[in-house]
Amino acid sequence: MSKYVIIGGDAAGMSAATQIRRLQPDAEIVVFEKGEILSYAQCGLPYYIAGLVPTAEDLIARTKEQFEEKYKITIHLKHEVTFIDPVSNHVTALALDNQEEVVTNYDYLLIATGGEAIVPPWKGTDLDGVTVLKTIPDANRILKWLDERKEIQKVVIIGGGYIGLEMAEAFHIRGKEVQIIDIADQLNASFDPEMAEHAKTELEKQGIKVSLQEEVKEIKGEGRVQSVVTDKGEYSADLVVISIGIRPNSEIAKQAGIELGPRNAIRVNSRMQTNIENIYAAGDCATHYHLVKQQDDYIPLGTTANKQGRIAGTNLGGRNAEFKGIVGTAVMKVLDLEMARTGLNEKEAKALNIDYETVTIKSRHHATYYPNAERLFIKLIFKKDDRTLLGGQVVGYAGVDKRIDVLAMAITFGMKIDELQDLDLSYAPPFNGVWDPVQQASRVAEKVK
Image (cartoon, rainbow, N blue to C red; front, side, top):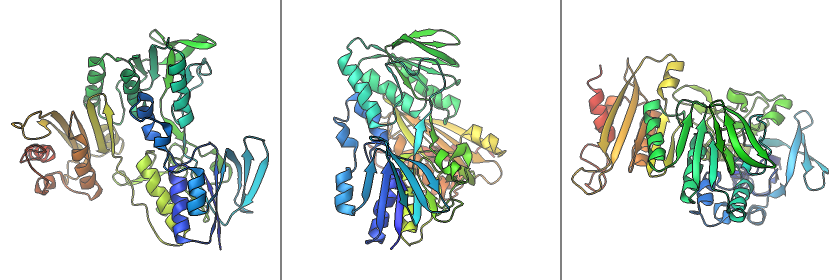
């Protein structure tokens, strides 16, 4: 019976491990995890800090003991794999508690090392009160600071992407004074500028300050953080969260001769295999095939990590499964505002030299005569020649997730923008108008020929 070694015990790694066990009841499965916690919901961390999720345990899918008892998986926590030998088929891991090396052979290896938060080489990133948010220990550190130091009132968040904006909301809920700084000329670069502007308006309406096109130069303090210095000014800070994105943990794969792809993610095929036949990769360390771009991409999301892990586990377990790809669908909440996107934005379409058109409408999320019909803004991007739907963005105060999922389905299966009108979508006054806003946008697009 084969021996499987998995590097990384979060979404992709443990999804694969449990799937292998279902298909190979007698196989030996060994997991090495650098941290102390397995399989937790990273996307829930801002809501834990906000107090909306009561405890860190609520974010943990299963404990080490549960995995070991139910699935008979050998798990080594606080073990960092430092070397992969693809010739002799073994890995070397360092036990972080006692610095002892553990050498383990494998028949099949899965790399699920995830991603790491990017921290630029600014002076002051090591000051007390400066952190990233990637793990439960990161979140617990922030909560400890907030609980023990009542003087913390001013929070600076560097980065205006998904996590940065969600953290702005978390600190706002806790009554802190929040300042966002971003080097870009807009928040959340995955949206087109006019759609991202709604987020800035919502944040400023609720008292959160936003400074764009400012480059951080250093973080100042005497032992503890005191301010953030940019090329345009200095901002007082009692706590700083650096949230400018993540990069794949792929260095160990590179050293083993494994091919890398976009943003140095580990390149995999549709079966999650690397260029070395018995080594697989999945999740935030791996590439993600983009159906619209028709090329490998890197868009790390929890949904994708779980899918890729399960597919890798299925193939490692002796069955056949393929990862069909992504279209870059994401949804987020910015205070009272909801924002979602799928497919390509205009910048991506231009980079691919696609001749495209756009249509943008303002509508309501349900029948206008029914109480509390909220504003909804929809932007669709489509090819000029054959009118294939390329992308969609939806922003509003209700009903955003419903519309983006319709668009994600349409893009996945190559629908034309005009075909959206033919969809038999649900209708009742509390939920929708007789023409769904997505279909309304499609009708407006008819005039763009």
